[in-house]
Image (cartoon, rainbow, N blue to C red; front, side, top):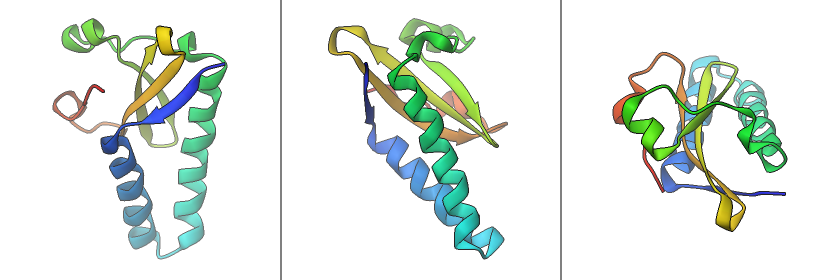
Length: 105
């Protein structure tokens, strides 16, 4: 079983998603549902982190950044096999210019 660790950027991303959705929808519950769905999807990585492919980008392939999709967001992560740890690098809206926003732990 793998541990999950979030980078500071990933925590900022989650907070931004929550507050933006709350502001747009004017409903706290909507924001909570989306964030819960993101955390639920991330939790699946404790059992099967290799189930998702490496991002098809020359630079990110070298860093072995993988991605999964949930709702309208993409979760970018990496795996440290030696530490049995999955690092959540960023959580960004689908369709955004993510290439320059991805951080690596």
